[in-house]
Length: 194
Image (cartoon, rainbow, N blue to C red; front, top):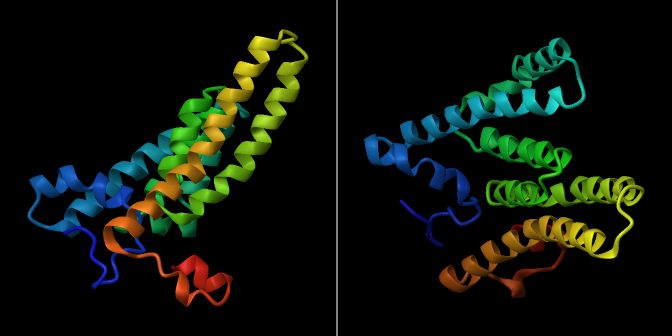
């Protein structure tokens, strides 16, 4: 039904409800639509997790790692209509594409994770480490200036996509809904919750 400052919906990030829109158009129940979106994200998460594990492990070990994750007691969060499956899918895709050298896709997946949960902002830290590590390794191979600068710019765009997307979401909330309440900020926790 959209966002409103009067019903406590503004703290929720938009990607999960938006991903449920196609199912909501076909279904009479918003809860069923959210559940279908979550189930689709959970299936894609299993695929992405296997692909990520496969980059470093043998096929048997990658299957075991994926099954261990999916069958763990904490995986119950992947079976309820909450954004955890979608967030984990975006986070896993961020790492998968970064390890594969697809930095723009990694930045887009990180930005989508941020539009799913605020914790997506933390993906900047491991992504920055991976970018630094890959630049250090590729520096031994690429000695020319333009190629090296292009790599730095590409990784920089991927890293900046995450906080910029979150900033756009906060700015949108502030402008459209008047949700920015800087006068109530007394400590860091209040700042996070505003």
